[in-house]
Image (tube, rainbow, N blue to C red; front, top):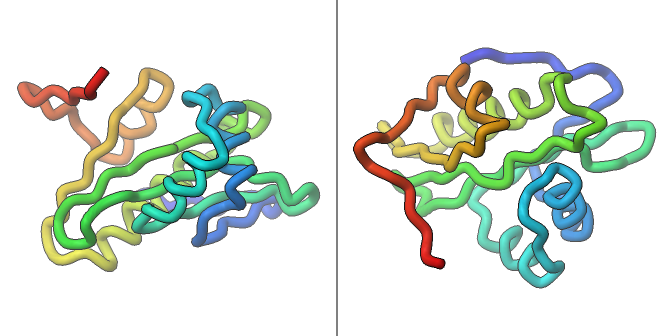
Length: 141
């Protein structure tokens, strides 16, 4: 797996960000807006969370989390980088951290999934994710 060192202006934290920062970064990064109540439940139900904070401002600028059963199924969600901090390797650092935690902690052969919106597809492919066709992701309307 590729490993990138973060610039000194950032710090990677192996924990969830504060709920207000989680909700704000989702919106700032173009993900669907969520309420503080939804954010609190998401954080509470997370198997592993990491985020990146800018040292000088303490602003949460990137994040991602893993939900799953801890046995074989792990789903990566909420990969987000603030637009002012994109193209600096932060999304890659978050993804590498999440995948490494799963591989280091889970039993052999974990099933790792994610839903890839167009902006993230290139990054996910670089890490080794492939389409699941003919399986198609679905959601309830």
